[in-house]
Length: 446
Image (tube, rainbow, N blue to C red):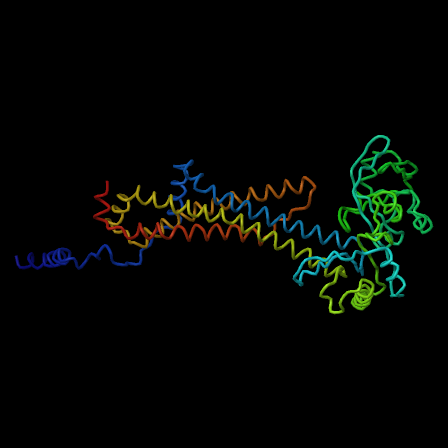
C-alpha cells in the first residue's frame, strides 16, 4: 500500500504543477516562436485577389506614377543621348559664334542691339587664327517643290567650308564650290532623307526644285549622316550658297541696310588646345566691332565650343526631365494616400478578426507586421505593373523613330524603390492602429 501511494506521488506532483501554471508559459510570453513571413505574403495576395476591383483602383495611382516616372526618365536619357550624338556628329574642335548672350551662368535677358553679320565672319577670318575653316550660316524654313512631291524643310545657306568641317560628303553628285558660293549660284545639295522624300528612288542630281519661286539645280545628295547640327538633322536639309539664301529667299539684310545677317558662325580649330585662345580673340574682336563693354556685361553674342554647348544642352534637358518626373511623382503620393485609406477601411472591416487573433496569443507586432506587408504587397505590385507600362511606353517611342528611349537600371530602382517607400510610409499608420486595438473591444465590435 505504501508502495502504491509512493508511486502516485510523481503524478500528484505533476498535476499540482500543471494546476499552478508552472509547466505552461503565459500566452503573451516571448517564447522565441515566430510566424511565417511567406504565409503572411500569401495571405496578403489572397486578400488582393479576393477584391480585384478595389485592389486595382487602390494600385492605380502607384501604377500611373511609376509608369510616368520610368517613361519620362527614359525619354530624358534618350534625349540626352540624341543631343550628344548630334553635337558630336558635326565634327571635332568646333567653335560656335551665336547671336545673343546664351551663357547659362549669367543673369539677364538676351540683348538684340546687334546681330551677327557676314562682315563679322569676314573680320574673324582676317584675324589669321589657326583654323581649318570658317563658315557663316543663315537658316530658314520653306516649301521645297519637286516635280512629283513637295516638303517643308530647313534651307541652310552656308559656305563650302562647312561641308568639310561637319564631315558632310556626297553620296552622289558633288558639293557646290567656292566659285558658286561667292557668286550665289542657284544650286542645291540635298540631305539623304530629303532627296528620298522629293524624288523617291529616282535620281535627284541634275533635277530642279523650286523654293519661293526660285529655281535651284540639284548638284549633289549627301551621304546619310544620322545626326543634326544647328537645328534639324542634316539629312532633312537643303544646302545652298549663303548669299543666294540671304538675298533671293529670305531677305536677310541688317536693319541699317549695309550688310546681311547670319544665324551663326562655325569655326574649326586645327588644334583642340587652341580653342580657348581662339574664343578669347573672337570675343575681343566682336566687342570692338559691336562697341560693347570690355567686361562682357552687355555682350550680344556668345562664343561656345562643343564641350560647353553639350554641357548646356544636357543641363537643360536634365532639369526639364527632373521637373517632369517630380510632377509625375505626385501621382505616387496620391496612390500612397489611396493605400492608406483602403488599409484603414480594412482595419475596420477586420476588427473582430484582429480581436480574435489577439485573444489566442497574437502579439501587437505580429498584427502590425501583417498589415505593413499587405500595404507593401499592394504598392510593390502596382510598382511592377507601372514599371512594365513605363517600359512599354519607352519601347513604343523608340519604335516610332522619334528618339531612342533608354530605360536605365537606376530609373528602375528609383521607381520601384519609391513605390516600396510609399507602401511602407502610408502603411505604418493603419498597421499601428490595428496593433493597438484592445482585443475585448475588438471582439465586441459590430
